[in-house]
Amino acid sequence: MSMVGLALTICGLIVALVGLVQFLVAAFREGIGWGLGVLFLAPVGLVFLVRNWQETKKSFFVQLGGLALIVVGSLLTGMGANPGH
Image (tube, rainbow, N blue to C red):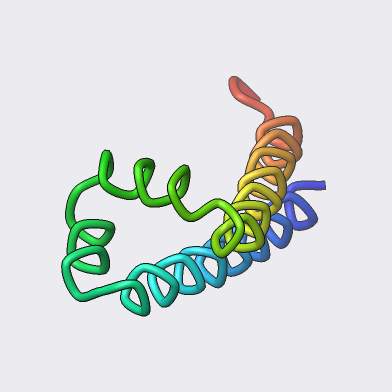
């Protein structure tokens, strides 16, 4: 069962990374300041997300889906482990 969890976790990381790249591309399209701010300052990313919801909602949900896969994969991996045995 832990191999399935590991595969889901890796897939989730890839999906989340794709969403992050989409988000960064949208920020750099808006301007170099936005792009650098999103890249280096987390609060700027949140502000950018809210101000540009129509352009960024797809990347947000892609990242959210990746996070869900990571969580499920981690739970499955943890369930497959037998501590103390």
